[in-house]
Length: 202
Image (cartoon, rainbow, N blue to C red):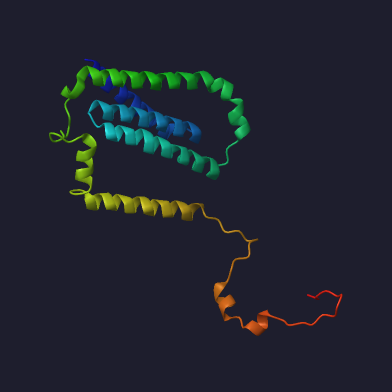
């Protein structure tokens, strides 16, 4: 019974936080709702026995959200004074959100111990093999090309983000390597014999 309650709790919070992430006007609020969605999705993965996927969601995705937050702050014009002024107003909401996440983690842990290994798994692992070993065996054998294709997609997305955020500055003198290689030594060097006690005239 506790597994069913935990599933519906995580599923409802994931859907609601995903909708609020898309509909929120403030980009900072969208990132916070996205973090909440990732945490609840990790809880769902724990319930089905995919502990490795759950840890990936928390460590990789929630950790990458910090980078996403950094990009949002860098690319958008956000009034930090206004954000600081609303800190006291949103502080109780933040405490409630932290309490909700902590409660969900405790609830998921108790639901896992309640059901143990009797929970139905969508893809049961072979005997004598852990979840991480079975996942690695599938990724690097049967789904190797799909895994490499996903890496290429991420590489293209990274290059696209760099191209979109790159800005040319007009006040910077760029290096012209072709002209430097074509220049003759006599055009670049001038021999002078200044008198003793006098400097070199430029």
